[in-house]
Length: 504
Image (cartoon, rainbow, N blue to C red; front, side, top):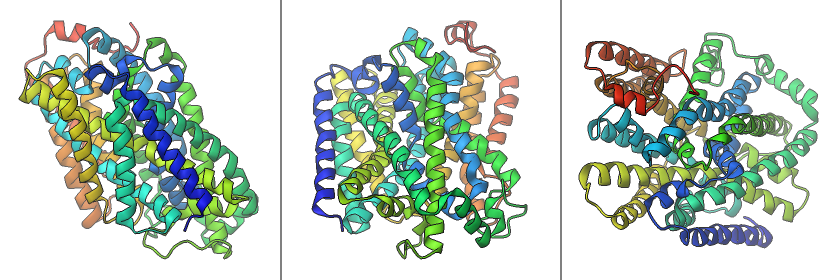
């Protein structure tokens, strides 16, 4: 149970978040302000928003848990995930930002409707798929927040979910992307500073990296190797060379095309930001990810030596970082600060996901498909109601948490990769991609991810991540169907800057 100092710090932090939401609400005059913060995000707000949209509960809770169980073979994650931010900004962002401003895009679905000349079918399918995958991903975020609140207050899982849902929903509904971006800036800075500050202390208390490696090697010599041998010989030894190949594609491309990440590029104030923001986002996130992974190693050693005891729950490894922080924090006040930092990390993606779900329903489905004559005020109201519903549904789904948070997060990213990667990449860079090709790719990817994911989870394990099969079929569907169906107009292709180039 948290002491009065920690509770006070956390309460002040939550009041600050809601206060930012109230401040942000005064800047909202229309739907564009609510969804895209008036396309006004400055360089650092945009860059940190990109990092924090990817830097989810997986980063502190999942990454450390993955490091705890799998050791060094999982280190490749620390390169692939930061690459997602750079990939999104460079490969997707440069074009989408320019054509988005010229054509008034509010969402990725606006781009799909324009590029593939499908105002209803592809827009609707994309929005429904986006809502589905975002809900899956959101369940993982609420699970991570629950882990933190259970640790802090000693409350029940369902109570933690309700508290988290109320706080995040409040400032997201009130302030839209203005609130999300500014709270994310604060949360991101807290996360970066906190991880850099506490992880070296935790590593030192575990005896340093040399001692950590010695202990890990004593548990299993392969824990200090670049990867596990193939085929896997234990449940934790799945990071084989073939799995890591698919894992790199999953994290770099799948996260880059996630709706809550890619929509951020439409909100940047200037296209000049895309020159340096990919490199800065990559470096910042690389440092954070490596340190968190090392923290997982350190806690594994502390547990093996009996210094730290994790809770007796099925997903005990997901508590590695927060129990490590508790052990390494020198006093109660510092512990309270780091409790806020851990909470900030898992909140920073959750709010963006909720806003994205609300946007896809209110703008893409309600406004552009069901009620084209809906007023701006009505769309804003529907968006806020949708955020509430997204929170409620994901909280219900999160009641029974997975054995390892990382698997749930990877499943959500896998569905994103399978569904969106091929239509986005083909749409931006292949003038031969057609409307029916995009529809086929999206349907095959979405259905395929469900089929292969179910088979991998409940029938037999694949040697690679299940999404590699689904995205490969989606690519095949895009190529075959596009070659035999009607091409899109040259006008649409030119207006959306379609072609084998990034800059023009």
